[in-house]
Length: 214
Image 1: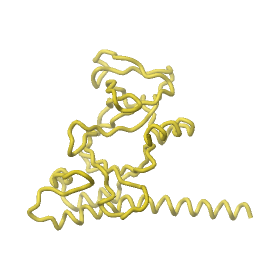
Image 2 (image 1 turned 180 degrees about the vertical axis):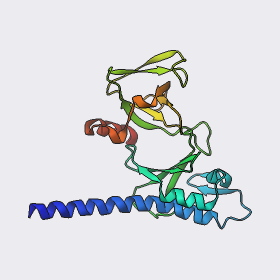
Image 3 (image 1 turned 60 degrees about the horizontal axis):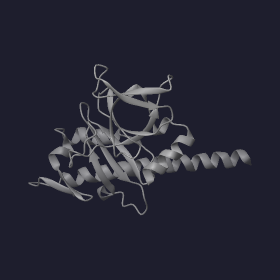
Image 4 (image 1 turned 90 degrees about the vertical axis):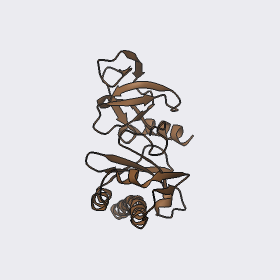
């Protein structure tokens, strides 16, 4: 009986996981299907912002876009109201923040914001995408530098289990780092010294979720 219940629960978990991922991608499929009908238009309203249609294509054609959505990676970063869909376009990446709070339309209206491969908003170039992390360093600390290489001066340290925010960069080895509430820019941290939300122990994840939700 216990074995049956376990198998049933696992089946439901797999089903809902697949459903959630499929639904998040549906929002993107819907967006680009709508864009294909936007002849002679330069912008589309998504959330509270108007996005340049050219920025949503990043110089790629529809075949490449739809193929990339099919292969897209979906992950959580600690905010229970959002999932991130990472669409890899080869030499470029787009990150879509997709609403996961009910009720959901599973249309492009569920997309909250969009960022490029440098972690910058496609609309507000002063707005960086930020995800929570702790350090991954056997020394118990890692250095924060003024710029994206070891050549730059050390500005400070991040200690073991201290939560901070970071901005991933496509093909970059150094990521921008911020204080845990995102208000203070700290400097640059080497990417291999960053342990993201999905790889953290459960007690750290709970702390991150509280920070992201607040």
